[in-house]
Image (cartoon, rainbow, N blue to C red):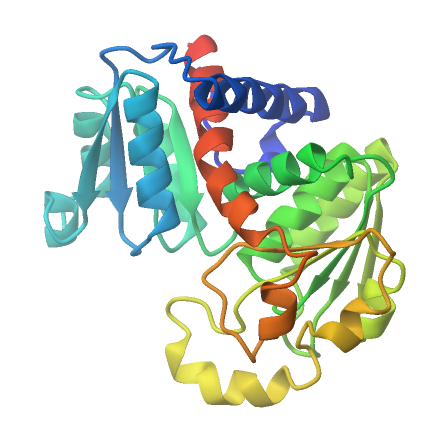
Length: 306
């Protein structure tokens, strides 16, 4: 049995295998072909953080695979009333076939997985958002940009940045991260990514200059400057991130075939301009749809490992 808590736990071959399964499932869906790979199976979805794309994609994905998904808000289950996480893990995992958790600290996810009897999927923590990176790479591959990737991440050193670091370090491509001073990535995660990069040949570059990061990049991505739980820092962050907006001026420095990605929700006029978000080189809505297909590939893959 395998859990999907972070890309750091997976090999290049395994990541690509999951993507390929997702692409096959997507192709079948577009042709009207439904295969009930997860017939009569249940996915328990625990949400301690709210969501749009994560809930809709997992719930729809399970339905399309022949199973069902159960929405479990922390406001509605005993976990929200103080039941120990390990007790919740043992009870819920005895009743469902797979669990997806969207929570705060990554340690909570790891504790749940430790006591779970079924595969656990990270739907987002403060450290990583690996299912989003499956969708991102699927989108890159569909556009034929997977060879010689030069990716640039501009913005906060958050869970998305950490996940991009793990993807680049595992697959062996170049990633440049531009963050303001004081908003860099977690040092421990950076150290781990650099260790993986030695094996894969990945090139990881860290800078405080967005222009350096995006020069001749084929992929440019960013994220909101203030994530959930950081609302009280919003004004301070807007000042700190001055000059970090991905706009036409910044995109003009990228490669001629470059594409823009964003995990959404996006705040127009802050981390990205309206023109870039709605421009011809933006893949954000294809990327959002691919959450559905990549996660179906993941669930089929995990089910095959049981």
